Length: 377
Length: 88
Ligand code: SF4
Image 1: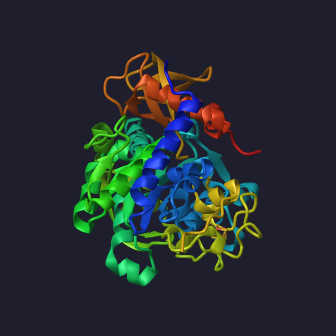
Image 2: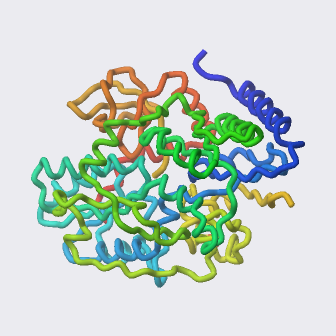
Image 3: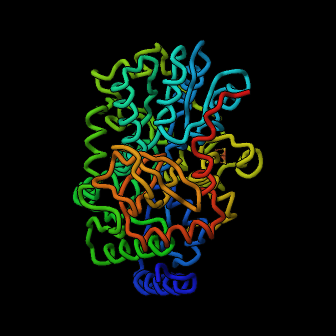
């Protein structure tokens, strides 16, 4: 037999839930566990995992959704780049509906005549450049550590092919920096973040970076981390691991997703990234503000492929819609239901903020699965 | 964009490329990020690149779950590479 059938899965899930209740229900404390990754947020709502937990365990939704954390000003830059003469902007499909300033989006720019293409892979963007030598092809690169190696390889491929009309608008960001920003004391004071007791670590990001980068958080901030797969049973098992660590006063990095995550991660992928990229001194995140050394830029030797250096396009910070609570939601300080636009003016069909656009965003997950459970008092 | 899918390598097509199959649909992907890829291996596919090898049982489990979910991620796979035409 190759896989457990649904019955066994459900049975395992209930067994794990019972174990969590046993460990947590009478401990007299609260457990605020942040799932960093939007994929986990989606799964937690999709499978109703919060309904299986005792009321003193609260899942806090983290900022691990690349579409959600990209500040409006960077999206505006992409729109301006796309509108330049002779430019083809290649983008992952998720970005098309993200609201920019003044009601703009890539989708609207496209309707107004900008040449914007959806690509599935960075290599499609390189192919576009080869097929259109008289045009400037700009790849709108966003994402955490899973999408960065593909961007690095595309740049190296374009360099090898001698392409002079391919460049990358780089918005790659780093998971450990975002976790550090959430844990840093000054950020807690200035931004009103919540106190977090432990982290559910992302699965696929960790496939690339390994479990080692989280050791710092466990040691330095005394916060346990459990790297978790995306299936309901994975998530429940990881929650149990965190509860046990907290009850025993331990703060370690545990790896529930041992099937694909090693301590060192994917060395080839990490090498590709370090050949092409270097740390950016400063990057603004939606919700988390400016975080030093939290994003990547192209190294000088690849400057010719860097859209920001090639086209003099300034970054103009922009706040987006005032009433949108995405920033506080991304820090775990508010819930989507705290936003007065939620489900009224703002729905997945008419998103006003990034957290409603991406299926990994907390607002979209709340809306889609209709879960409104309030935290325990 | 954040979806990752387990797929099976059915042919090696170049030093860094392979054909993979999922639900009867065949696509070419990059295998430049994994060590020693072989026909029959299951890999985690993310934005056109294999990120890691996984074992078959794990792959089958995840696929069963995705199929039960209605297949947003699977639809993304089948549409891959077909959306790059110029706008009308
Ligand atoms: S419901 Fe819409 S407007 Fe409100 S916080 Fe979420 S994305 Fe922003």
